[in-house]
Image (tube, rainbow, N blue to C red; front, side):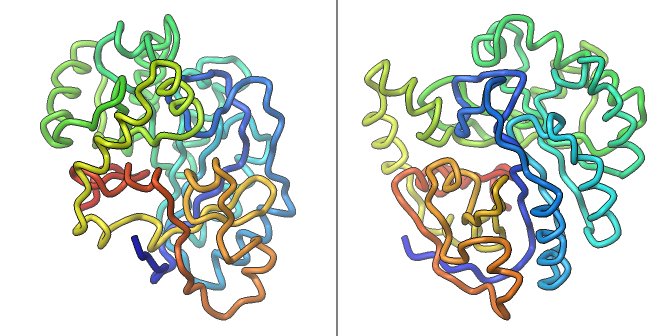
Length: 295
């Protein structure tokens, strides 16, 4: 695969690897014991780059981004310059007393919610996220609905070594099932599990890694290369290192852009995207990425 960056559209900030959960499909390997946190200095430099190159969308991820004490500072700093700000949340963190404030903060800053809800059935969901996680997610979604937050999108990940089903059909099914709990949302985005991090460990444990790679290879579609997210996105890690996507960041496959400080001194962001076999997860089947099926 030969891919080149061609448009500054999305800046993704991975502001922490700490999380209140430890999910087996997590490509970051986030858990409560991690201590990596993005500093204000790095945030300020990222903002300068965002403005200089005219990025349109800010995508804040982790770990659980709410665990970084600078999250609200990020919103207040970028809001005037970003057409859209996304937060990737596991929802369960919003039920903890210290972090319930973010529901109102998300509303006040007009944040688009990207909420991980791996499945619409309790047993399947809890198998991926831990017992009791489904009920917590439903409660958090209700609180977001009650707060009047309109832009709530859900993220689906397969519960195993297979590709997601049709995104539009699954979105309809999610809405039919979750309305039974009094929950509404805007869009559902399907993401293929990337064979790295915790998910790769699980695949190897059950001797399914090679089989999954073969599945991705068999479903590879060259036309999906036209819309891969890495052509319009840079990922800024907690320490200011630059990557072509959050998956490359998890593998420490640094972009040739090097660091956010280095990018501030550049006049052009054009560069070759670093690829490896895990990239097949974005170009197989319907074509996936951090924003679901590429449209």
